[in-house]
Length: 135
Length: 300
Image (cartoon, rainbow over all chains, first blue to last red; front, side):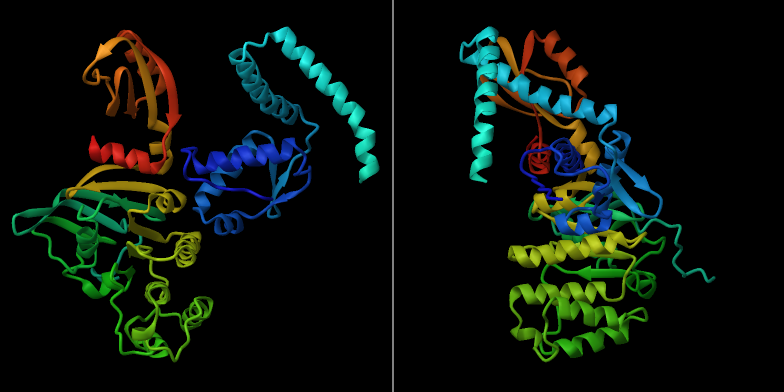
C-alpha cells in the first residue's frame, strides 16, 4: 500500500491517509480482503504519530471501506457494498465538477462537453484492441 | 508507598504560573501548562521564546522564581532523584562527556539509572551505527545526536524531553530521531515533549501543540483541533480599504484594496455570517499548514 504524506498543503495527515486509501480501493489497487499494514508499522514507515494512523483507520471503518477482524488486523471490506459504490461516485463526481468548471472558464457549453466525452469514449474503445496487440 | 514515590496517576508535567527573569528579560512570563500522560506535545516557538528555559525547569536545573513546577506530582528541585530517573533528556547542545568512548558512555550511564536496559542500549547503538570504541569527541554532529538520543532512551523513561532534537541535522538523522519518538509513544503510556522550530516534523509526530512566544504560552490545543479550526479566508469587499476591516475571530490579516485575506479560528458559518454583515463575499478558503498557523499567532 503506497501512501505519501505531505505537510505542505494543509490537509490533516489522517485525512490524507483516508483519501488515499479510499482512492486505492475505488481504483481497485486495494482489493476486498487485502490487509492494511498494522498501525504501528504504517506509523513508523510514514514517520507519523500512531494515533493519526489509528484515527484514519477508524474513519475508514466507519465509512465501511475496511473492517477490523478480531485480533487479525484491518482488511478491505467487500466492495460490492452500496457504500463503496457511493464512494466511487463521489470521487468521480469531484473530477466531473472540476471538468465542468474548466469547460465553463474556456467558454465550452455543456452540450459541447458531453459530445466531447462521447467522442473520447468511442476513441478509447477503438484503441483498446490495438493496445492489447502491443502488450 | 513513601511520600516521594512518583504517582502514576499524576500528570507527567504540571506547571503553574511560572515566571523566570534573566536580568531585565522575562524568559518565562506566567506560564501554566499541564501535559497529560501519553502522546507527544510539540513545544513550538522562535529562538529565545523560552522553550529551553521551560524544559530546564522541568529537569530541576532552574529553580522557579515564582510559580510551581511538578513532574509526576513531585517538585524536581526537592526530589531530583525521583524525577530525573523518570526523564530522558536530549539537550540542544548534546552535552556528553567528550573524552569517553561510546562503550564507556553506555556503562557510565548504566551506573546512574537502575532501569537502564543494556540490551536495548546495544540494540540502539547497533541501529545507529555507533562503534563502541569511537570517542565521543570524534563523532560527527549527527552521530553525537544519535548517541545523545540513545542515552535518553535506553532506560525507557516515562517522560522524554527533547530540546530541538533535530536542529542542524541531516534528513537521515532527523528520521532516526522522529522514528525513535514514534516507537517510544507506541509503548503505551509514555509521554514525549519535544521543542522544535521545524514545524513539518511537529505536524507529523505531535498530537498536542503548545505555542510559546516571548515567554508566554499563547496557545495549547490538540493538533487536530488546530488544523480543523484554523483556515485562511479571502474576502472581497464592495469598496476599497486602506487597512484590513475588522473581522471577528480573525488572528491576522493581509491584503489590499477590496481583497483581504484573514487567518481565522472560527467555524465557517460564523465567518460567513460576519462577512455578509460586512458586505463582503468569501472568494477563497483554504486549510493551513502548522507553519502558517504558528506564524499567524506570532505575528498577530
